[in-house]
View 1 (cartoon, rainbow, N blue to C red):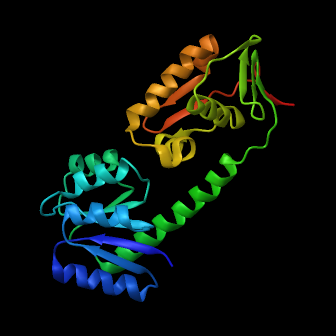
View 2: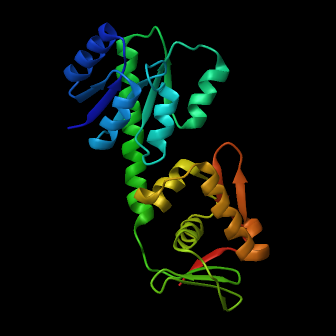
View 3: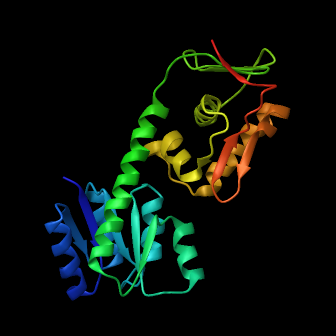
Amino acid sequence: MTTILLVEDEAALAQVVLRELTSSGYSTLHASDGLAAVKLHGDSHVDLVILDWMLPGLNGLDVLRQIRQTSSTPVLMLTARSEEADRVVGLEVGADDYLTKPFSVRELIARVRALLRRNELILQTLNADRSDAGAMLVRGPLQLNPQTHVATLNGVMLDLSPTEFTLLQLLLRSPGRAFSRAYLIETVWSETYVGGDRSVDNVVLRLRKKLGKLGDSIETVWGVGYRLRQESSTGLARS
């Protein structure tokens, strides 16, 4: 059964939301302060978090930061802040969606369902991207062999870390496809990830340098993440 963690200190509101979530077929957990929320999330299997911004002890934004250090669990922020700048901050820290108070419980449930559907689609794609087809990947002078875990450029073996190798393999398998930083974190780093978005950027920077001129083919997609430019002159081949 899908488990949802509600982090809300207003007892009356929490009671209403918990009742509606239960009647919609979800298993629920509840925390009324930020510290309890972080502990409960760490100790339990949670499929989605509904997180209030204003909390005693540790506010919702700090809770979100701590969750994002170790997990990509979908997070729906509840906030009384209507300013665009506040909402942007929440999304940049790692919230997947937000709902401004006051809100209808019907809309809340609809957003929960939408986030869960989106996450399920992401997981299905992750499983496909993590699967190792074993085929040699070739782009111009670059060759990558998933079976031997060796990449060469102009016949010279590249000194790649496991993370760099996996990232390069993912990009080579889908030229032209834009990968978000969040998706790369979940696909490449998975359970070992403990950094922020800058860690992703740093790995891409190192990979670009090691690939030389070919590294320019790894493009930044502003506001999203990265993609490998699709070029007919240096098209991807599989052998």
